Length: 385
Image 1 (spheres, helix red, strand yellow):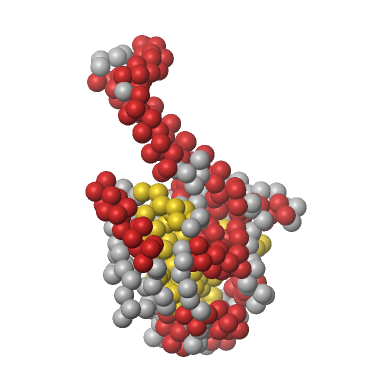
Image 2 (image 1 turned 90 degrees about the vertical axis):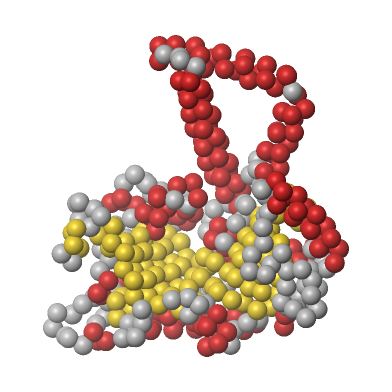
């Protein structure tokens, strides 16, 4: 077994401040345009770049996102009677490649650029996820090996697999979830399977894992070979009931002092064990190797954890995946058009070669429309282009 990644996977926080009136006046007409166009529109303000969504949510007038970092910003219409007007969600890619320290600096700098004034006491940290990814090709997940409180909820997920049998069932267990948010949730799941199933959305994880292995002089993982690339993730999710109600963590100073204890408690309250056939008292069962390995990794300093993958690599992976997707769609549309126009398979290649001339003539017929579409596409993919 070997650690291939460890770090924060999600961060949610609220700011006890409203956006300035100038920012509201800048965003509101663009929000109306986005709603009319039914698509996200680019926004730049104070040097910060976002996509503005055509809708709001849960009392927030504006939703903005930065596609490359998968961060989301929620703003309410300024209201003196409702000071908590900002909510921020930071996704896994940013945290994995940059670390929590740079994420915190990014949040502070962005709020400064947007003209938001606030103090340390106006920060309220909500849900925080921490994960450890372990290369463990021989590991087989058995839900009954978890030792938890009798009142704690447990959900198991079994994936059909004709080659594997687990606990008398056809298939293998790929995920076990203990607890519920906004409380504490502990999950042990097949991360490799998730990455493969979600395609381009999660493909970057192969690069993250391999960059960490390369830094240690270890050969990269082969995604096609499960016996060599089976990665399991142990993830701790601390929701508001844990962070604020139990541990009184809201500000960054509280987080720095106590979040390590939050994770340590999770590994203590929930344990994945090696069953002892001679001891019926499950509480005395020893921890499984995979659990102890993750626990030891989480005891270290968590603040600056990050992978060895360069931030620009995320952009390149997303760009390559989008190009691949667009090419697939373009070829599919051309072949469909050929079918509609009665082209036989023997003449398909000649037909496709002539498609370029037809497209050229279409653009020449209305160059302004084509230029507008090109500009719109550049705006839509400006974070990766």
